[in-house]
Structure formats: C-alpha cells, structure tokens
Length: 151
Image (cartoon, rainbow, N blue to C red):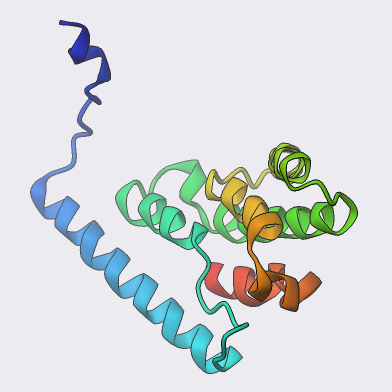
C-alpha cells in the first residue's frame, strides 16, 4: 500500500504524444549539437552540448504548454543561471560552498527575471563543476555553449 505513494500520477498524454516528444527530443538535441559544433569547432576543451539541455528538452517536448518550457524560461533561465554559476566559481573557491551558492543565487536570479526553468539549476551547477572545458571558456560559457544550445 505504501508503495503506491511513490508511483507518479500519469499525465494524460497519449502514446502518440509521447512518441512525438521522444522524436522531437532526438531531433532537437542532435540539431543543437550539430549547430553548436559548426559554430564553435571541436576540441577537447570545447563543450558543444551542456547537460542541462537534456532536461530542457524533456520540458520542451513532453510538457510544451508548461510555463517552465517557454522560450524566455529556457533561454533566459539557462543563460542567467550559467552566468551566476561561473561568477560564483570565480569568487568562491570551496567547491561545495560554491555549488550550493550557485544554485541558490540562480533560483533568485531566475525568479527576479521571470525566467524560472529547473534545468537552470543544473546550468549554474555546471558553471561550478564543469571542469576544464568550462574553466577554459570562462565568462563566455554562459553564452557559448549555454545560450547557443538554448536557442
């Protein structure tokens, strides 16, 4: 009986709608990677796709009418949050503290700019934990690849 509490309530999507969401996400992510690759080139320190785009694709293609899946939320939320993450990483050198602070400040920034987008939290965290590719991009990271991926 308690197990039923952990089973999600199914949304009213039909099988056709779910398949279209899967196809849309496949095409969307593949095209985003191809366009970013053409725009940015390639190399070990070039992040053509960032992980939060996967979560953005879920929102965009599975629940397109959600306020969290609208263009300003996706583009603004991801870009602003990545900028927050990179900025926090620049000033706070304790990774654990920087991670928490980046996500918290990203939520605040998205709230104030009316661009709340849950994958933005991941974009902020990527700005802190992203490794050599993000460090090499520096303050360009929020724009290329994050904003480029989001458009």
